[in-house]
Each structure stands twice: as structure tokens, then as C-alpha cells.
Length: 318
Image (cartoon, rainbow, N blue to C red; front, side, top):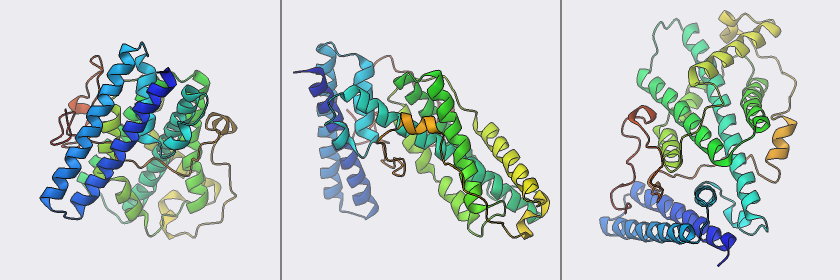
């Protein structure tokens, strides 16, 4: 059996396991009977066991962990896995798709930073001296931190070049710039709803679940507080450029800004053929079982409270 075929098996089982896990969550949320939930749990456990065995066979065949990790991760995260697995150069196709995931996460971080900055402006305009939702604010920062850890882990897995690091960092900058171009300096009426959507604990759960299957990577994007500070600076600069005082921005009418390119030209080359409009939304929590014994553990500092059940998630672990 060739290396590409073994990697396709691993990716197929990871994708199937993700689908099974999503179905289980849907059944659970819909209040399905306990017996039905048990069947879904057993199915997911069997798929997970089959994937672990496929990984073990790949190791025995001399395939390096990096390629195994890439196949598993692509199966977990990429909705277009069926297209990826058909490519003649599977390694290159998996890498291209996963770089697209990193770009999408960087763009989400940029949007989260600017949404938080605009919301802060709204809170201050309402004469609020304290954060009205401290629990949500803590979760918001945790979500950004978890996304950064995921980005760093994927960056290490893919062995991103310095040029790619720079391009992905630019994607974060351009994402918040585009958000400002679309929404203007003035906070929208629904800014709180947008902020709450980014404060959902599932964001950290999914990112932590994926990151726990991989080795830690060196950071190449700023930390959440720095990202938000940069976004706040950009917001103030835009207010000044538009002739709007930041302190009174809430009462001003937003001018129609000129459109800008969403991402740098080099990003387009990195993620050629990747549909960047389809952000990965696959839930990976509960799918983090790995044969690797040298994977760096995710510490409590990396996790939101009760956000990640670890490799022995009830009913779905080994």
C-alpha cells in the first residue's frame, strides 16, 4: 500500500469521525433518546479506533508523523477533503488546504479584534465605567488565545516560511481593515450581537480540541491584547481620517468608504484553489485522540474553564 493511499485512509476516517461527532452533537441538542445517543457514541468510537489503527499501520510502514498529522488534520478541518484526497500530489494539496485554514483563522482574529475595539467604543459612549459582561469578556479573550494556539500549532505542522508568516499576518490586518470599510467607524446597532457570537465558548473548545492533537508551535502573530490594541489604533486613525472624533463616533453618520482588497496578493498564491469564504466550522472537540506520545500537553493556561474534555471524552475515547 503506497504512502498516499495510507494517508488517504487516515484522512477519510478523520473526516468520517468529524461527521459522526457532528451528528452526535445534533442528536444530543435535539434531545434524542439515550439509546440513540449511545449508538452514535459507539459509532464514533469505532471510527476513532479504526483511524488510530490506520495511523499505527502508517508508522509501521515508515511514514513520518508530520504527514500523518497533516492527513488527520486535513480530514478533521477541511470540508473539501473529498477534493483534496483526489489530487495527484496529496502532500502538496493537504498543505495548501491547511494553509487556507490558518489564513481563515488569522482573518477571524482580525475581525474579532476590531469588533472588540468597536464594542469598547460603544460601551464608553454609554458612560459605562466597567465591562458590562466580564464573563463574556474573559471568554472572548480565551477564544482569541485558543485560536492563536491553533494557528501556531498548524504553522509548526506546515513548517511555514517567513514569507508565509508575513502574508498570514497581513491577512489579519487586511481582515480588520475590510471590516472597517464595510461597517465604518460608527458602531452598528448589532455590534453587541456580533461580539456575543465571538464570545461563544465553542470557539475555544474547537480550537483547543484541534491544537491538542499537534505539537506546540512558536507564535508569529501578536497576542490578543496586542491585536485589540492595534485594532483600536486603526479605529482611531479611521475616525481621524473621516473627520470624526473617536469620542463622538457613536453619534456620527458613517461615510461610505472605498473598498480595499481583503487579502494580500501573496495570500492568494498560498491558498490557490481554496475557498476562503467557507471558513472551517467543523467541531473537533472530542476527536483529539492521537497515537503520538511526544505531543506537548495542553496546559490549563491554554484552556477555557471546562472547555475541553481531553482524550478520554466519555463514550468517545479509547
